[in-house]
Structures are given as structure tokens and as C-alpha cells.
Length: 338
Ligand code: NAD
Ligand code: UDP
Ligand code: UDP
Image 1: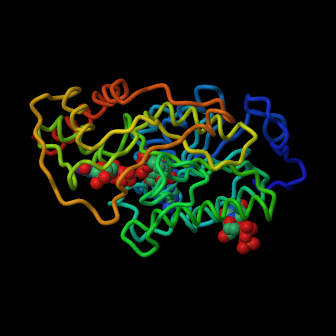
Image 2: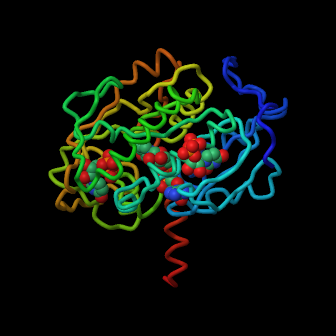
Image 3: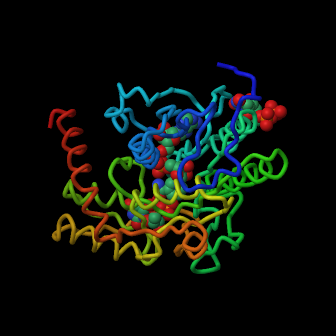
């Protein structure tokens, strides 16, 4: 399918708010790398529901076919098992680049952020597609500015245990901006703050999935350090709406996409107890190295330029993931013959 490029309709200039018509006047075709993962699969659901053609590229490193199985058989959906560290040839209008080992237990030693992003930018350049990078609040490191605005350059340890992720995403942002300035690629950069919801990896060590799974399994909630460090937690549907607004808007970014509601880990544990099991106990464990002390997005820029803000506070969002977690934990236990 290596057509000559001259017939392509570029998306530039089509800022109507609705997805512009794609190559040769048909429905837009959209790639979601990492689409079998937590955020990606919710994004794919939204795009399919409104009538787009969606191709998912995923190597199932942390993603699961189960997240997409309800779309198998849909003629507008395609799933390709592929590692984005290797080049790929496709013809599409938009690329949402989410592929990345996204949690501390998975992301070490993996070059996806740099090599995968380079390949997807090369692809976007060749076919004239718009490219959206899912960067992270981790680019701010252990921030000395609070809340964090997009203008803040961050406080990142370049040789620490987390640096593969932080610096990997910082490099990915650099690459995206270089392709934008140097090759005219239409890029969009989202800096995503901690996000939770159904289909989160059960065992990737993130705090919301840990606490929810622990409460369901009647295990103590593991609070690292003194539990006074803060995070701001966003429900996944809010994030997905923000990503689509960013892709279809006319601004490159970067944009913070997060919920400014800020909680200490002890407060989060309380909300999990209220939601799932008031008798749950807390177990303190040593914290990980270079753990950011606090994090909270300033989202004024996204509010003003993307007309986007999150709608679902933590106390409303947490209950929405509990059934999904219960079912998966039950299935796991049955699988083990328990
Ligand atoms: P996830 O682990 O559920 O999804 C990542 C997906 O990428 C998985 O399906 C995985 O199999 C796939 N993948 C990983 N390496 C790959 C490779 N080399 N080739 C092809 N596919 C590959 O994580 P998520 O929470 O859905 O995160 C999605 C994106 O959002 C990531 O880029 C992450 O850095 C970013 N992000 C997420 C959060 C959050 O709180 N969830 C916060 C900040 C940024
Ligand atoms: N690439 C890709 N698919 C494409 C075009 C490029 O995977 O359709 C990869 C390509 O293999 C290279 C990267 O993207 O590793 C960067 O491509 P670019 O053309 O920008 O750089 P060059 O190949 O000239 O170094
Ligand atoms: N954390 C915790 N208990 C856990 C997992 C994480 O107290 O079981 C803490 C962790 O030390 C950090 C915060 O929760 O301060 C958020 O961690 P997570 O890995 O979810 O996200 P990130 O550090 O990437 O923001």
C-alpha cells in the first residue's frame, strides 16, 4: 500500500472542530500506538464510536487483547502486533502515539520513548499525518514550582532510576518539536498527569491500581514513605476527551492534561477505604528513589485554548473502576484454581 504521496490531503488548515476528511475524501484513518493499553483502548473506543477507521499498533508489552476484544470483527478496526522500535509503513491521517512502558516496574531499560517516537515521527513526516505525543507530568521531575505550568522546565535527575522514563519523554518532546520545526510535521504534545480507570494494569505498581486491587483482595494498602507526597488524579474519560480536543485543535502545546484535585497518598488511601472497604488497613513501605514530593497541574492553558477541563472528581471516578477490577481479580483467582 505504498501509494505516491501527491494524492494526500494534509490536515493543516482544517480546524473545524470535527475530524477533517482524510486521504482521498474518505473517513479519517487513525493510528493509535499502544492502543491495547489502558488509556489507548479507551481512546480507540471513542474514535470507533464516532465512526473513524482505527489501526492499533501494539506489542502487548503491558497491553492486553482483552481491552479490545469487543472490537474484533468491526470492519473499521484493525490490530497489528508490532514493536514501534522497528520501522513501519502505513497510510493514515492521524497518529496518536501512546506506545510506551508506562510504569516504573516496566519502563526501565526500554528504548521505546526515543526509538519508537522517532519512527512514528518519520512515519508522520513521510505521509503528512498529524502526530500527537502522550508525554507526561514526569517531565517536571521533582518539581520546584507548584502547581506546574507548561512553561516550567522541570527538575529531573538525568542518571536516576526513573530517568529512562522522564528523560525518555523529554527526548520524545524534543524530537517532536524538531520534526515540527525542521520538517513541518503537525505535532501535538500532551503532558498527562496521573490517570486512573477501568482496564488499568492490575500489577504495574501504580498507586491507584495497587490500592484498589489491595482493598478488593483484603490486603493492606501499601503506602510508600510517609504518605504525605501528593498527586492529582484524573479519570480516564476526561483524559481521552482532552487528547481528542488537542489532536483536533490548532495548538501544538505542550498542554497539561490532568485533574487539579490534589491528594496525599494517605488521603487517597482514605478515599479507597470509603469506596471499597472501610476496614482496610495501611502498611508503610520504603519509598522509591527520586519520588516527586508533589504534583498538581495548572490547566489554565488547556482550558483557554482547548476549551477542555476534567469533569470527574476522584470520589466519582474511583467507584467506576471497581467492578472492572473485581471481575479481573476474580478471573485471575479462578485461573489459579482458587
Ligand atoms: P499502558 O501500559 O496501559 O499502555 C501502553 C501500551 O503501549 C501497552 O498496550 C503496551 O503494550 C504498548 N507498548 C509498550 N511498548 C511498546 C512498543 N515498543 N511497541 C508497541 N507497543 C508498545 O499505559 P497507559 O497508562 O495506557 O499509558 C499510555 C501513554 O500515556 C503512555 O505513553 C504513558 O507514558 C502516557 N501517560 C500515562 C499516564 C497514566 O497515568 N496512565 C500518565 C502520564 C503519561
Ligand atoms: N520511518 C518509519 N516509517 C515511515 C517512515 C520512516 O518507520 O513510513 C522510520 C525510519 O525507519 C527512521 C525514522 O522513522 O528510522 C525516522 O525517519 P526519517 O525519514 O525522519 O529519518 P531518516 O530515515 O532520514 O534518518
Ligand atoms: N505509591 C504508594 N503505594 C503504592 C504505589 C505507589 O504510596 O503501592 C506512591 C509512590 O511512592 C508515589 C505515588 O504513590 O509517591 C504515585 O506513584 P505512581 O507510581 O502511581 O505514579 P508516579 O510516581 O509516576 O506519579
